[in-house]
Length: 148
Image (cartoon, rainbow, N blue to C red; front, side, top):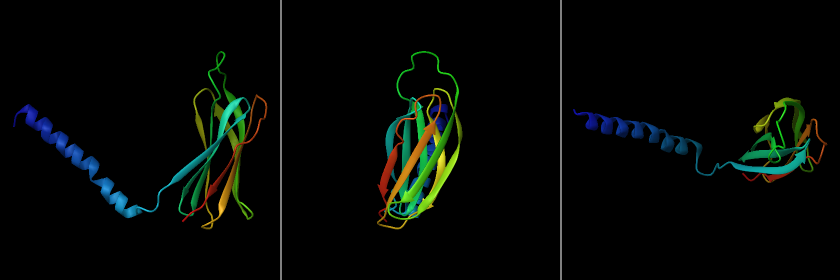
């Protein structure tokens, strides 16, 4: 086999390996279990903050994101931010909360929260609070429907 033929065969084999798992995964998860991601934005501690929820069926993943609100005026120093993520079923029970500290410099950071289950047809409200060097600001609050 010449060099070009070997490269072509290798590329075809690699393409076959990369595409084979996709149909198997799609069949295993089902076509009706799409994940819907919703985030709401606010300014807190002089930073852009987001409360986010990924809804897949009745399962909800709650998390926050922190980033710069705009281009910095000068060098960005490290900050320790104190965060709290909480979620509840609107008109119902708490789904949980998690607090902690997050080191932030100049690149966006995801603050992992928790996974919960909510009844089909309900609405989940998630709140993300961040305290740091800047003014407290308004907490982002996201409300998502749970459609199963």
